[in-house]
Length: 292
Ligand SMILES: [Zn+2]
Image (cartoon, rainbow, N blue to C red; front, side, top):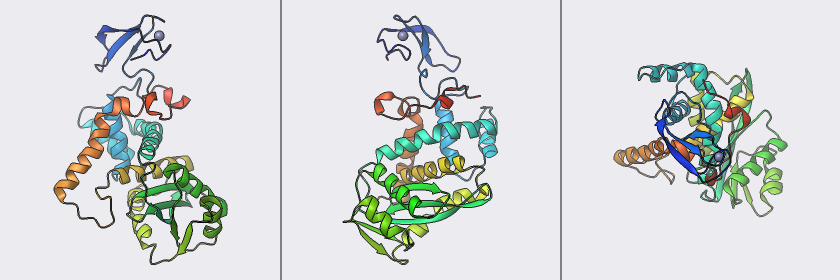
């Protein structure tokens, strides 16, 4: 691997390893030492990378409080506080969201169902704009404090950026802002349909985030909710065994697909979220601080 400090390819592996067993290297150009995690968001974590990734995946996927997650890992000998879980969620959930979004770019269907659901943030109801395609695959999720033209336009612009292509049809519940937002953001050729009946699909799909956020009794801040909701939706979509609406998938296949989707992510953790070659966003300044 190239040196994370000076990018020189002249790295020599050292005989010793880090406390957690990661390989160490010395750069012959700048004389600095580093290990396998140097330059990644996982550097300086006091637990192995796959454990931190698993903490975030379980926190996003299941109805677990921050303390639940910390307790579950305590039984396996990993000691960290619920505040650490919160910090890892803050640092790694956006990376996971970006990676999963990038993976499904260009793969979404051309018929979108769009709707908003309510999420409580700091005691106030906010609007979570969500869109799925006609096969139930995720298009986009976006949290907004308002439900108006500006928010609808911003949502469609985000969806377009994520998916990479405009849909042929958009079905909504008929809120006043949608016709103009569709026309001006997605283009005049996109057909806009209004039907409560046809939009049942997305209304049922809100269950995922509703069920997950229910035991949390709302989010403390807008930033926390805006980070958690898309990450949850992306992971839920990634672990979804079906690719078509109402597709029959046997239990054995569901287990195989789920194990592949979640297990592969954990096993590939040290490099997959962080390698610059993947074009993923690099960690922000806040991400570079020591974890615990
Ligand atoms: Zn160097």
